[in-house]
Amino acid sequence: MKKTHVLLFCLTLVLALSVTMLLASCNGSTENETDAVESADDSAVLEGATEPPVTEAPTEAPTEAPADTSEAPTEAPEVPTEPAEDTNDQSDETKAPSPDDYPEDEYVVIQTADDLMALGALVEEEGLFDMTVVFLADIDLEGYEWVPLNGYNMSYVTFDGLGHTIKNMTINYNTERELAETGDTFLGCGFVGTVGAGCDLEFRNLTFEDAYITARERHVGCLVGRSLGGTCTFENITVRNFTVDGWCDYNNTLADTDGYPICFRVAGIMGASWGGYHTFTNVTVENIDISGFHNLAGILGYDASGAVSAFSFENCKVENAKMTFSYCLSEYYTVDMPRKFVSVFYNSADWVDNIDECVEMGNTYTNISFLDWTDDYAEYTPEDFRSWTEEEKEAAG
Image (tube, rainbow, N blue to C red; front, side):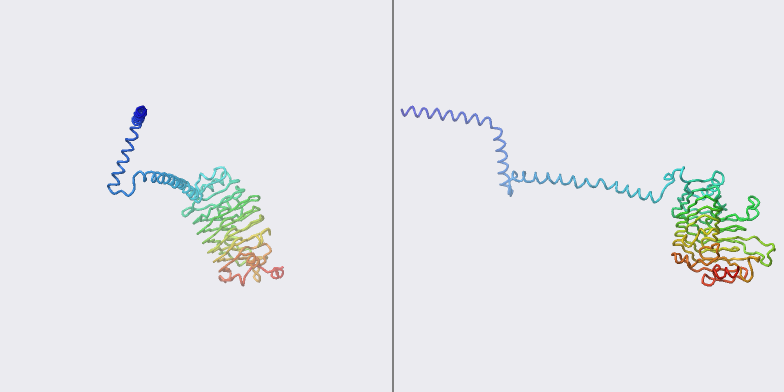
């Protein structure tokens, strides 16, 4: 019996051994790789490594993966930086517009003196209506003789200087030339000559500097000579260093004595107006020396219609102005009460003082001199010489 048990045990042992050998042959490659890793670990330990490489590998792998992920979004926001620079470039272009920004059917673009001279020919030959004349540069008219624009051939026109300056405008109007052509003894003289009835002109953001006008029997203003019912708007306008030679050498002895024709109604902006409502906002007239018969003023020489008042002037300044006037003797101009029609801002048809009213509206003046050519250039100031008061007007009848 014992032998049987021994034999059975031996068979069981042989079977178990066979199974073990079969499993070993199937997993041989895996065990070899494991043995290789373990032997490498053992070598590392023997060489003084503090931690087994197997332990470090899984620790570093997750650390590097997030690092790569975080770098990607960090670089991405740098891409929109270039469009931001393009936006700034566009704003610069807005500050310096080009002719392409202004359609030809709505604008006339002025960039040179020749462009401006060509504008005069265009107005004279074809007229200008419902248009804006825009200046893209300062214009120097030195060497040119400016002929006033024909206001009869313009309507609903805006002159926008965009902050630029017209320099050295020179006008030389002699009586013979103009009277022979028109028969009009009181033509307007200025950048624009005469503004006709129903004409609407606007002047904005423009400076005239070093303008010089010589004229005889004209209404003279740097921008507009006269208005015959047209409406003019002046906003952000400066006239600086403006001279008018109105020729005061007139024979003042007798009413019927022939003399030299002289300018009537002279001012820094507009010479005279017979109708039309005109407004002056942020207008500065400085360093002017003008001469003529009567109705001299810093901004508007004479308003015959009564449409202009102190309310027509807002934030205007007249500084460093010399106005030399003259007068002749007649039944209307007498020795005892010569009509010395001069004022700081404008003269009106009622011949009364309006200086204080204009100042009350926020307008200012500094260093104004009125010189009487017929009285050895006797000098007056706004404080002691103004247009007639109501009492003087009544006393003169």
